[in-house]
Amino acid sequence: MLERFYQQLSSIFPRTLVHRIERLMLQGGFEELQPRLFMGFALFFSVALALLAFFLVPFITENSAAHALAFPLTFTVVLGLFYIFLLLAADSRAKKIEEVLPDMLEIISANMRAGMTLENAIWSAARPEFGPLRDEIKRVSADTFSGSPIQNTLTQMTKRVRSVVLERAVRLIVEGIKLGGEMSHLLEEVADDIRSNYRLREQIATSTLMYAMFIVFASTIAAPLLFGVSVYYSEMNEKVMQRSAADSGGGNADVAAQQGMGTFPGMGGGARVANGITSSDFWWFAVACLAATNFLGALILSTIRSGHALRGIQYAPLMALVAILIFIAANAGIKAAFSGIMA
Image (cartoon, rainbow, N blue to C red):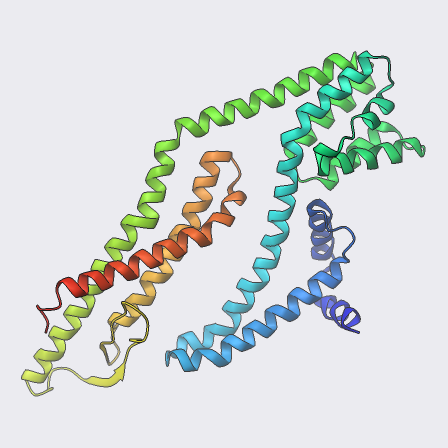
């Protein structure tokens, strides 16, 4: 019943998007799960959480803009997380395959030197320690022994794995088969080339370690401390304006009694000035900036270290959480240290 409902719900997605999700699921190892079933569940779950956020936001804040953005923002973020999950799964599977690909190529080369044909050498190289690559090799061997040309089955394998390294290696192997070259020597050269690329990446990662440390320090430590000082200054300035307005009889400032979000740790509860920006608004601005900064910082860090920006997404939540906690602690510490000034 639910499966049929999810499939009907996914009919609103265009066919091109369905094909893209289907390929990502295949590359991520979820080929047994129907793409429309996954998309329907993702849509239903996103709408449910968006409605929940829409009805909960009024109990958290009276900001009309936050109430208006609660549904579309939550819906977009949750639906995007499902897509990111598929991307990460496909990338993780490709990474595991790339790590053992040189070893598998050397085993195939050794089998061919022992007198095996290319098809039998590939089939014999499917060892359990190769993980997902073993499954792909077994599938290639099964398709080959059923009558498909080895070039076609290898090319089809590259479509099931989201890996540029594997695609280049297979392209060289297919060209070698077509040209009739010595395959054992070619396989060894391809394996050595892949290992050389990995060693080069490690050298680049080592040489850019200082840049990575600077990005982590700036986004998770320096920025939260500066925002903590800025929010405290905003709260102090707000209190000075309130006292000035009270001393002058309230004629120069129209101060409402509406309070900020003082229930959150380290967050000011200053009064809201009509048509003005309060310290609570600035608090939320700081949190949003820290989340965005650390998200982009994680992508840049991953690009520098591994050459794949996507792999940094898994570190972004942790970096953002650490930065926000440091910001809250810094703001609370500054308020405690200078509490006597504005008492």
